[in-house]
Image (cartoon, rainbow, N blue to C red; front, side, top):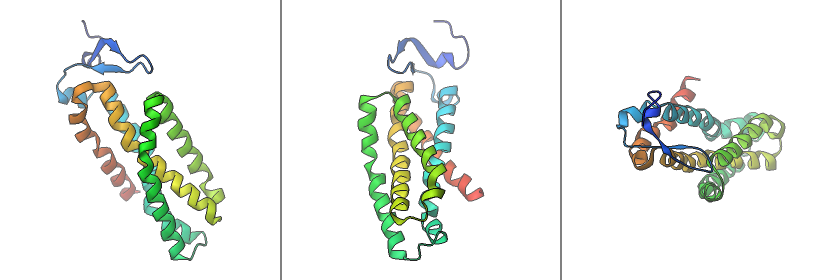
Length: 180
C-alpha cells in the first residue's frame, strides 16, 4: 500500500474499527508512532482535559476555605469522598465497553465543561460543593481508563510501549499547574 503522508505510513488502511473509524497502526517503529499526528493529538487532548481535575485535587481545600467553609473536618471529608469517586473510574471502562470512545470521551468533556463553568454558582453550598468536587474527581479518574484503551485501538500491540511515554501527560499537566 502506498502511503500519502508520514502519518499514513503508520496505519493499515484495510483495518478500521467500524464504530469509531480509528485506524489501527501497523508495525511501525515506536519513534514514528510517538511523532504521529494521532499520538500528539491524544497527548494534548489528555493534558488539557486532565487539567481541571488536577486543579481541583490541589485546590479544593483552599477554594473551600476562600468561600466560607472554615470546618477543616468538612473539607477533609470532601477530599475523602472525592477519592472514592476517583476510584470509581472502572465505570468509565464499563461505558467504553458499550459505547464508542468518541461518545464516552465527549461525555467526560461535557461534564467537565459544565462543572468548570458552574463551580462558582455552587461553591457556597456545602452539599453542592461536595457533589461538584466528587464529579471532578470522577472525571479525572476517567482519563486513566480511556487513554490506554484508545491507544490500543489506534496503535495495536505497541500501545503498551507507547503508554509508558503517553503517561507523562499527567506529569506535563502537573508542570503546567506549577507554572500557572
